[in-house]
View 1 (cartoon, rainbow, N blue to C red):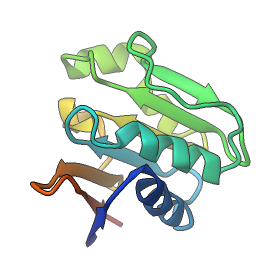
View 2: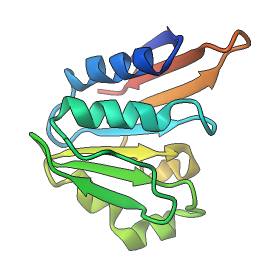
View 3: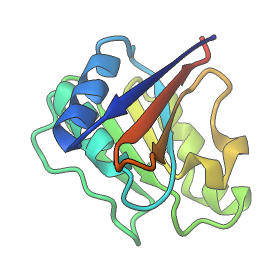
Amino acid sequence: MSTASIITLDERETARVATELAERLEPGSVVGLQGGLGLGKTVFAKALAAAFGVEETVTSRSYTLVAEYEGRLPFFHADLYRVRSASEVETIGLEEYFDRGGITVVEWCDRVPEVVPPDAVVVSFELNDDGTRRITIEERV
């Protein structure tokens, strides 16, 4: 297991961190994003998608739990903000996306941590007192 923490000053730096992570991901990778509202999870997801050639804009849709995008690899973006239980996640078949050979990003993975595979990369976002953000990347491989 490997853990790294990075301090970012703005969205551009957050996107750079995501692009660097993308270089280490392989088909079938799952990336869980966790942290409060407005801390950069969606910026990170957009940059990951762009790194895999997704041209469509990735958004956090409050009422769509999983969105599919086309790029060099299939890109799946799940937003669990409104999910309350693992059984809700089971009804949408999130785990099936993990086996489709693409990259799956799960925002708000901490809402239902039991659905995140043990080998997922977990990225945590925290706001520092000085307004910067700490991004912690835990690679469990």
